[in-house]
Image (cartoon, rainbow, N blue to C red; front, side, top):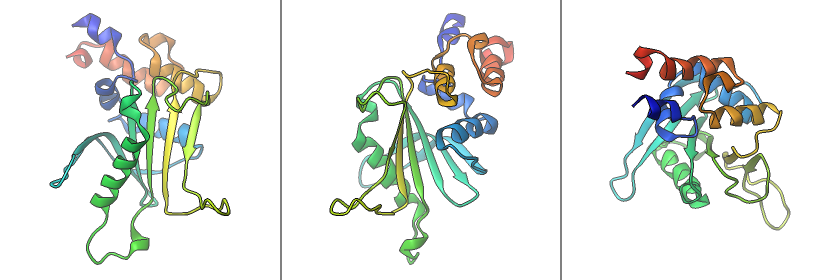
Length: 196
């Protein structure tokens, strides 16, 4: 049991959900990935989205910010789990849960789906990918307020994002870069209460 706990990393789904119940950890993650400070109003881990007519989802983390935007954070270790159509499905199911009868279309909130992947599943050797819709004929943005972001944890350079991805892949607490993550991971890996 102790060996299993020692082997856990933030890229491991169940462990990530536990660590990112802590709002300071989510704050760090979002500030680095989004490149700006996001004021978090509420966050839930293991958030269930039930679909009576089709596939349901249990998403890793769902965040609402002070602008009313919703951000879904997922970790995926294998390529199949991070397929672009899965990101699309996450976005569509979140939208269906956030829209109500008689609500004006413009009032549906902005959604961002973030996949943090162990390998470079899109294959362009980039540390981060921002996916937004465009009009093919003129290249202009089609602003439906949706965005999908893929973060490639295999690139662990000396940037803020690279250091964060290093922390996602770390088994040893003392090797981590960010204190807020070190503290939270250390509690669950090194204290008796956390291990229990």
